[in-house]
Image 1 (cartoon, one colour):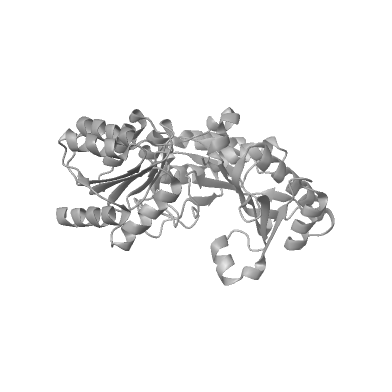
Image 2 (tube, one colour; image 1 turned 135 degrees about the vertical axis):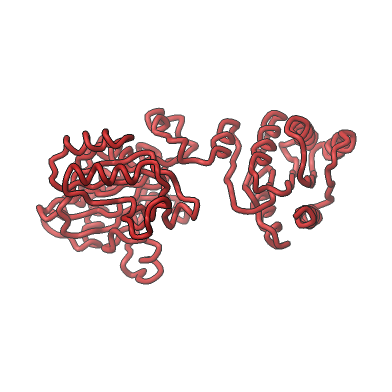
Length: 399
């Protein structure tokens, strides 16, 4: 789960981290009112969407030479003008894709006098199974570009969970950023607080880009991006309350209500599979035969008939799905339950596109019999390779 920048900064502030004063706004008048509450005279008007690259983004409804989604304003009237242009319009960035995202919220922040910009993030390093820091002097830039072009400018290190964060970790950050004296002391404090926040809130990602040094000699988190481990959200109702469903795919929201693992993709073949490994293999073999998967949907090891029905309805709700492949290996999951769920869903929502079903494992013969007896126009497959070829052929034949 992701949250907006202004929400992330409120979380950081609760852990004592240095941020600039700022006010969220849902309307132009709230933006103006918020700006008047800030010290000024320089303000930053920031679009709040769940995507990076906002500053370099472009609004669909505005001229090509219009400013991006993060703008400086040197007066209250400029705040008003910028807010009027940004709210309700669609911002396209490198991370949103061509469809973009509609800007429904703004963050009006007090301007900062910037001396230097850095990059700092905290994440889970799956190779070491530890929390790791990624630090670079190249702040305010696309870190992937830095990693590709000048990887020597990125420093990474992990924290031993047995000791937790220690002063030497903060000194490592200071050294990587070339900080000394009082700024090095600030870096130690900031590193400790970031790690504490990361662990306490079960984050998956905490990115500060840029982390700045002001001309007054202060370290400050000028931006903040946070992602949280969805499996741990039950421990954090305060974080769950920050969820903005307008930023998420409606099908993914519906899937989460049934505890389904669903991710929308760009292809034409919908996939219902049990088990992440089998799902990945299914996606790969669809691509091998020349088509693209429309989703990743894992119904899990012990799905009920109702859960399978919900999964099928979510897949068919996607207008770009031209065919569906159900690929089930029944271990804990029983093939007859899958069959009953698919039939119930088809009877409820109808079936206007090709459907290929491959079942194997527990109660497989019963599952196949249920589908045969249903009278539905379902294409049976013997194995995964056979299933992939049949759904690709069916989809191409329906074009």
